[in-house]
Structures are given as structure tokens and as C-alpha cells.
Image 1 (spheres, rainbow, N blue to C red):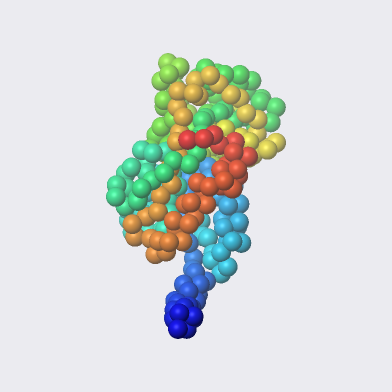
Image 2 (cartoon, rainbow, N blue to C red):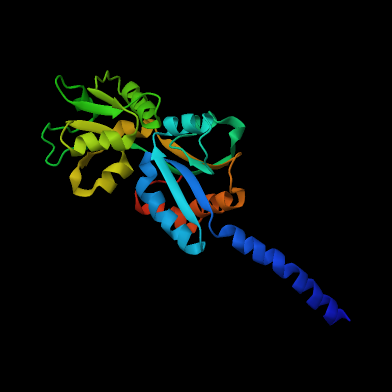
Length: 246
């Protein structure tokens, strides 16, 4: 009788398990992530898809402030990964239990050969220098203001961009003599730019949080992705890209 009861229980559970398996297939997880995470999250997204049959991870990369504005405006998203805790905090309870997963610091990016001869942060205040930075409302822009204040410098950029990748793009194209971006951006750009470290960068360390969103369409899948980023493989990929521990 006991054996019969156990078999009956297992048979009763099979349809439920099967439904759960089918539910995962065909799902599209929407992840909003800071522009500086483009390379690492794209790689992690492919690995996550490989581990979840039938699941597609769709990313929207951009300036953290812009991503938060989109979410506040009703844009559908399951997960947000921001380039700083302040920007994540603007979502309030919409961001459920944010967890820090990485940190980053600024570095000066210059075109190959460093034609303007930039050697430290003070050189960014040279008259006539074409400097590009992030806008103040963007995490990399807030960090720029912090390091400038720490160095008692008044910077006069020719352009303020809405994402760090836009800043990097102008340096890569030769439109700018220098740009303030993250260490990871310089590393990811390879030989398209050169990096100039500076002491004051330690005065503005950006901590990256990630969270599932209260209105997420796929709550369980979103939590699995967050765990994946926080887990061993996620941390390995981030470290390889130059991100530090939070």
C-alpha cells in the first residue's frame, strides 16, 4: 500500500513539474543595465540562455539615470543593474532588495599615442583641451565631479554625454583629446584608446547594485539571473573585465 501511495503521489506531481518546465520555455527576460556593463552582461546573458532552455535574455544598455527614468515611465523590465547605488535608490520599493555585485573607478581615456600628452588629472584643465565627460546626473558624471572636487580642479568639457560609452566613442573617433570613463571601459576598448590612471580616482568608487523589479513579468527567472550575476561565474566574468569587488 505504501508503494502504491508513493507512486500515486509522484504521478500527481509530474504534471505540475512539466508545466513549470514549459513555463520557462519561450520566456524573454528583459534586463536594463548600465552602459559600462555591455560586454560583461552580454557574455553572461549568452551563458544564462545556454543554461535555460528556451529562455531569451534581452538587454537594454544605457546611462543608469536614463534607464531609471524609463522604468518610472512604465517601460517593462524584469531586472535593473545600475552603475551606482544613488541612481538605484531613486526607484524606491520598485527595486526589490538591491544587492551590490561590483565596483568601478574612473580612468582617463586618450586616443592612441596620447597626442595631447595627458599624464594626470590636472592636465584635463589645460586650456584648449577637448575634454568629454558624462553629464552630472549620470553615475560616471557624478564620479567625475567628485574627483575634480578632490583635486581642486575646475573642468571645462566640450561635451557632456548621457552614457560612458558615448564618452568613450568620442575619444575613439578622435573627436576628443581625453575623456573620463571607467577602468573597465579602457580595458574593453583594447588598442582603440590608451588609459591614464590618476591618484584621485580612489575618491569616487562606484558601487554597482542589481535588483529584480516589483513589476517584473518573470519574477522567478529574474531572481535566477540576479543570483547568476552574484554567483561564481558572474563574478569571474566581471573580474576578468576589470571590475572590482563591491
